[in-house]
Length: 139
Image (cartoon, rainbow, N blue to C red; front, side, top):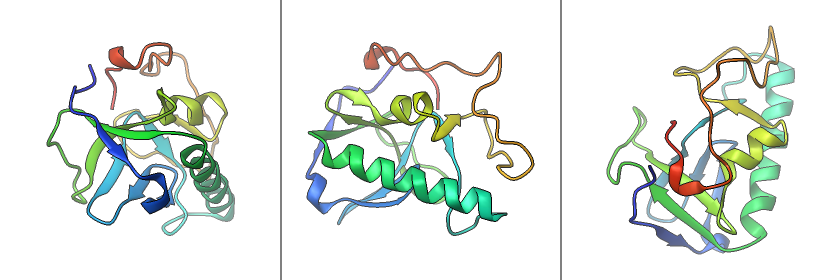
């Protein structure tokens, strides 16, 4: 369940670092529910290219409408200190959009290799309910 404490964001002040990381002037955010290809620590050119495409798509999503961050739970951070959030754009979870459009895959509990196989979805993957953002329950 998404936390109720939504944090509205000024999309003009957001910097997209890669497909699952966004920075503002005062905070660093990690999008919940997805595994996105890396850009800066990519293991191969294919991963770097996909990571760059994902970054550009996330930038376009953020520019497309109202943005808010929903921490889940409200104060949890990852090992890099990023606040764990659902990023809503026009009321829809950006992670759902990126997975649906093939830019990312569901988070399976750990970062996976983007170089030996590009498998965006597998049977048994954690599911994100993209029809009702209030029922999202994966990280």
